[in-house]
Amino acid sequence: MSTTVSPPSNNQGWIIDDRERGLFKVDREAFTSPEILALERERIFDRSWLFLGHASELPKPNDFITRRVGGRDLIFNRNRKGEFQAIINACPHRGAQVERQPCGNAISFKCFYHGWAFNNNGRFATRSPEGVYPSDFGDDGSVDLVRVPRIDSYRDFYFINYDSEAISLKEYLAGSAEVFDLLADHSPNGMEIVGGAQEYSVRANWKLLVENSYDGYHAAETHSTYFEYLLSVIGMSAEEVIASMEGETKGLDLGNGHSMIEGRGPWGRPIGRPIPAWGDEGRAEIEAIKSELRARVGPERAERIATYDRNLGVFPNLVINDIMAITVRTFYPEAPDLMSVTSWAFAPKGETRELRKRRLDNFLEFLGPGGFATPDDVEALESAQRGYASAKFARYNDISRGALKKNPGGNDENQMRAFWREWNRRVGGC
Image (cartoon, rainbow, N blue to C red; front, side, top):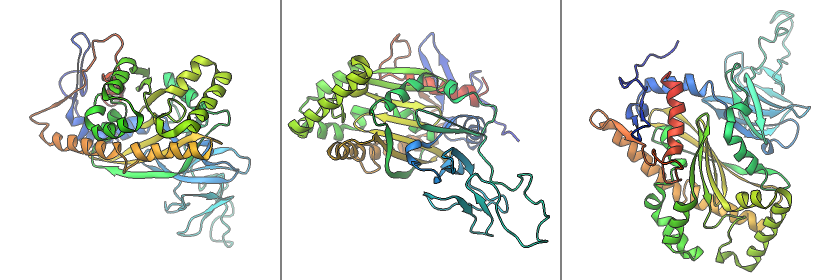
């Protein structure tokens, strides 16, 4: 049964989108309403392609990981033939989790509650004494583990969709597919998720983290401590860094609610511009990597892969930060004012130990839960959420920056408007 909630009387759902005047506003009810969250779960998370995992996480047949995706517990596994699968991690008997380990290698799964067993294709395999169940019990598949309706991959990134009638993954990804191509082409050996996941919660609405993940406007103010530290390491002035970000960063609408900011990275990319602290050896290593890239993908594409930063948002809740390190991050609303966040480091297979160390140091230093950026961002998002208690009197968020520009920059808000238009189309029914 669908949730009923009336949109505001501006005839545009929960946004005001005046393209002629360059005004864009979002009603703060979108961040506080339980009814709107129910609509989001039904119309967005139940109908969108959601990131499940990366092929590198399951290197061998029969490998599995358990993961919560779109509010549901899943088993992401490979069967004996090596085929990738997504199975609902709920026993058909009483609903308990069938697999409770975070990862492993198994040809079968067994529920701890009553001992029902299944092969790793999800097929019912319990042996019961004669007469307990009918002789043909389970032959019709009714007590098999349930598969997620859709699973597909692009460049080894696996996605699921709970809607069997959804458009194809490739069509859904639209212009964001090119960014996955850039990521996959970083290395001739392929890419991999590194180590375990970082998991934390934020007492704020999930859409605030969407916005923040590709918001270039807040960086200099919110992360001033990091910039002060960084300038001492890389030997650049604040003016040079800001000029680089302002001059070359673009805010791009990639279609279907996906968007990103992209621009030449002025510091510290593991395969981009070396910093003095890396020394001659580090500089030589980076040049060798860039030389291989140029030979393999051509000089123009190699330059974009190696020296440009990208903050990509794939609607609704996948963010990939290809900056000082590559971070893959998802988040899901537990309540209107609470989200759970999971992030992973992503890196080229076979890179040297020193380069991997620099990459992971960057990953932890900036975007880790205890790094320079994330605590700043969490404080800002939670502060905004507290401010929405006054939404009756201060009703709208403004997302108008750069709305009249032909080519918006990364410090503008074109990328956020792309998200909100798709959100409003789905939730507001416009």
